[in-house]
Figure 1 (tube, rainbow, N blue to C red):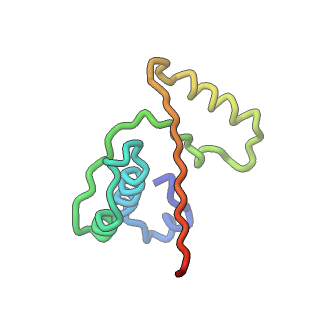
Figure 2 (figure 1 turned 90 degrees about the vertical axis):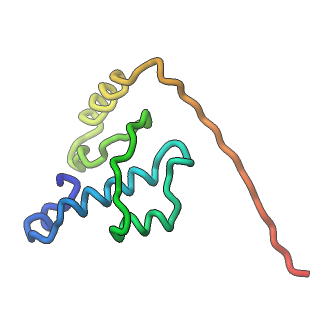
Figure 3 (figure 1 turned 120 degrees about the vertical axis):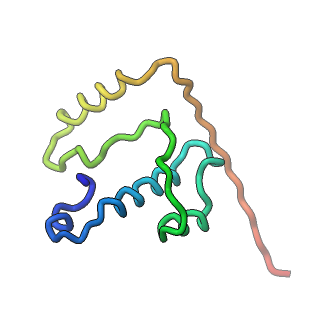
Length: 109
């Protein structure tokens, strides 16, 4: 519940199950492998509660916890956290990068 604004938590209008559902759906939507990501119709069904939302699979993707970085912190406090995080990564994990570009042009007759 630390991701939820404190003012909302204090007001008492937050359903922890709903927050968990939203986070799980978000994590499904950013899966590394496109075939694991739900389509928009599935996302709507998940968000509206028509289907159960399972916990997303573990990932090797690097996700930095931006919520833990206070605005008042200077860079010197953030860099050691990130360096420590990077040193904990498995060096045997393969890294890859790919990109593509496509363009379509429509013109009238």
